[in-house]
Every structure is written in C-alpha cells, then in structure tokens.
Length: 284
Ligand code: COA
Ligand code: MG
Image 1 (cartoon, rainbow, N blue to C red):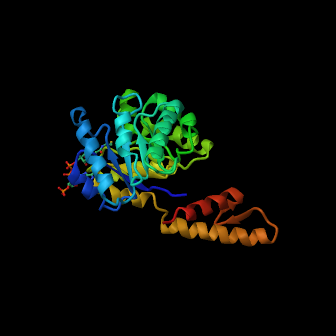
Image 2: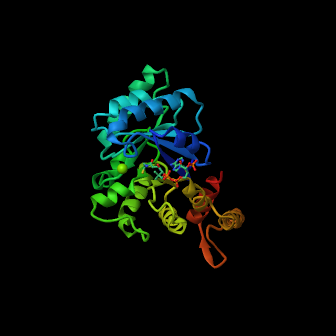
Image 3: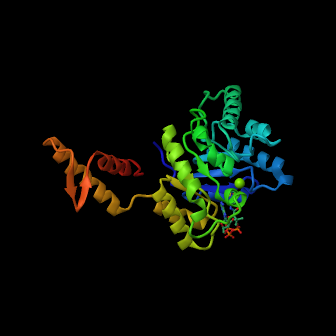
C-alpha cells in the first residue's frame, strides 16, 4: 500500500511552475489539463504536458484530464497515456460507467503504446453532488481505481455553499468518500485542495480534519502548502510510540491467552491493535 500524503497540482500550461513542482518534495505532482487551463489554451497545454512526460524522467506524476463528456478527453488521453506517468486523474467523475469509459480508452492506448494493460492508475476526481452520491460504484468501477480524490471547490459551489475554515459544508462529502473507498476495498481517499494559500493555520486545521475523517493525504496548489500537509498526514512520534506499546502489550497478553487488556486507561483488543499496525504501515 502506498499512501500519498501530499499531491501538488500544477497548471499543465506553465513550464516554469512544472519544473519547480518536481523539486518541491511533494509525494506526487498532478499536471493539470482541466480547470487550471484556460479554454483557449487547452491544445497548447496538452502539447506542453506531452513534451514534459516524453522528454524527462519524471518523479511520481499524474495528469488530470478533462471529463469524459468533454470534447478534449480523447486527445488528452492520446497525448498523456505514457509509461512515464503513474496514472490519470479523471476530472468531474460522476458515475461508474464514466470511469469504465476512461478505463477502456486508457487500456486501448496502453496496448497501442506497448505498455502492459492496466499499468496506469486511474484516480476519479469527485467534485459534484452526483459524483458524491455515486462514490460507491465509482470506487468499485475497475481495478485501475486505487483511490478517490475529492474536489471541494466545484462541490461547494454546486451545493450552494462556500469552502469555509470550519469545513462543515464538506462533512458529508468527505465521509461518503471514506466509507465508499473502504467498502470497495480500495485505499483511503485524497482530500480536496484547500483554497487558503496564505493561511497556514487554516490549512493545517483543514488537513487535520480530513486526516481524522480517514483520508490518506491532501491535494495542494502552492509550494507553501506542501510541508504543513506532509506533517499532518505523517504519524507523530507520540502516535508511533503508542502504536508500538499497544502492539507489544497486546502480543504479550495474547501469548498467554488473553484477548483484551487495559493500557493507559484504555481498552485494547484486536481492532485497536489492527489500527496500531495500520499506523506503523504508513511510515515512509
Ligand atoms: N507548482 C509549482 N510552483 C508553484 C506553484 C505550483 N502549483 N504555485 C506557485 N508556484 C511558484 C511560483 O511560480 C513562484 O515561483 P518563483 O518564486 O520561482 O517565481 C512561487 O511558487 C511563489 O508563488 P506565488 O507568487 O505565491 O503564487 P502565484 O501567484 O505565482 O501562483 C497560483 C498562485 C494559485 C496561480 C498557483 O499557486 C497555481 O497555479 N497553483 C496550482 C493551481 C492548479 O493547478 N489548480 C487546479 C487544481 S484545483
Ligand atoms: Mg474542478
């Protein structure tokens, strides 16, 4: 299992930012062909991204393509299905059927380009009420889908609300993605971009909320957001110490035939130990 604590978006049109993006220490970069690119520049951005992924040995990279109902999807995928990228992020994913359409096209292009079918990951970017309500079928749409991502800016606009520092408006959408991912047996989802570029405290609280709700990491848009987000999504020294103590104490008890003990005033039984093992498994 590979967890992305922090994935950095960069507009596919901006060569300078793209070069910089790869040097900033995010776990992965998403080159965007969708909303970060003006409609008049779609063709140029596609060429820029194609050139970047063809000519350089890239650190972990995804490309966000336009939705399956746009006129761009076929040309986007033809240009960017490439062994140099880890996968494709599909904008405005709204149903399992849409995700399977993208999966099918990616499969054909993989074959055409001599890449073993199924190599590229597909991250459905869920950013509408319809997408949220279809999250369960989207998460189970095809084996290429290993994690979902939440798009909070489109979602809040569509649901007549505003991305706030308290995060109340995203509560249902976030919970839905966490539960849908778990029910489908895929990895935990990746949380939305936070629009507060200059307010690191707000960003930190937003990321912490998402981590507590079950997300594996968060999308970011600016270099200043990377370090705080990586920090929030990395287990703390205290969490690691506690997890190790829980495992040691429980294994000792289990060896003498006991399945439930008390440690530091709390009950420890199998699910608590499993959670402690989970925390240690995410260490980089
Ligand atoms: N990737 C790489 N570098 C970035 C970056 C990004 N996402 N965002 C900013 N930078 C760079 C700038 O180029 C600048 O570099 P420099 O000091 O070498 O000139 C530096 O970081 C500081 O940037 P700043 O001036 O604070 O921001 P900006 O006004 O240039 O850009 C945004 C602000 C929002 C336009 C920019 O952060 C951005 O494009 N983010 C990604 C947007 C996106 O992809 N959205 C789609 C998904 S929601
Ligand atoms: Mg969007």
